[in-house]
Length: 399
Image (cartoon, rainbow, N blue to C red):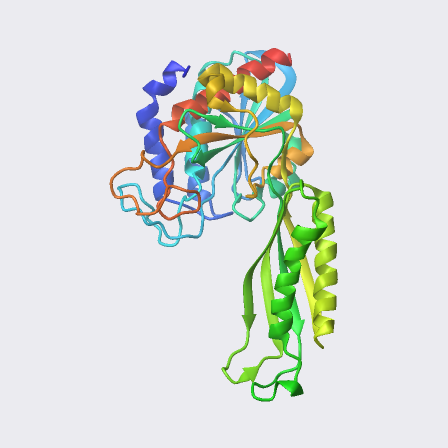
């Protein structure tokens, strides 16, 4: 593993920064303290910045030693999750119901680490934009930054992102060209029937039975309408109806999510859902209504930039520790909005299996969005080395 020497010297400091962020988690669009900490570090290293995009976003600006119109962006997310941390080690969350359960504290620390190095070693011709983004966890902070002029204020030719990945061994990277993460979409189905006494069901139209049949019929979209080689998931995660044991209610509600890798599959699923909801309810004397919301698009890596990232990763950890055709996940990521606008690549860096956690961690696995998760601090120099090599080698290839 070829790590840049300064990162090993700075590891104690950057670990302390990461753990300070972990101990003070802030939810989407509330990342005021975190953004202030980022700004303090950038100011300390003489890096100019722009604040306020997306509310709490910070964009650091590092000019290379040689002038050029070429530029790239490196992105890290800053927000935490609305969940209770189960860990009791010293840097556990100090705010009940808030936790860095996805490693955004580590992502921020890795990019800060790289910023420190790049501020001292500007061995490139062009500009690097350090994008510290708010509100990745379901609130589309990337989209908001773009809508508020991210790419107009800071023109760049490519953008790169990285996420820690539990289960992928430490020292390993994973990436794939094309879709790497799915789109995230949600639905609410209301089925309106006619309430009745539970002992006299023939006098009503039961929305619960219509809801049950609708939930089952929705799965036929995946098994009978979707191309077998196209990714797609329809999950009914909630059914709500009724308030008394002896009353057939007048309304039943179903909620859930849809995940796909392509808009074509997503369009088909939404159309089939609308038809199934309407006609299944009608067949049982009820009325069905579908509300479908598209949240995050699929995260799709461009071919050229993915090949470039594989080359960079291989130079750091060796070919055996780079999975260049990693299996995509049905999880979602709002870096997808950036990749809709610019070429780029989103990679995974192995967080290990959890052996790195300090004494006092929770009993559960070290998985994302789990109360016993913690970011692996050994990644801090590795992730920062990756960022620096992306910068140096991209500008060398695109001067």
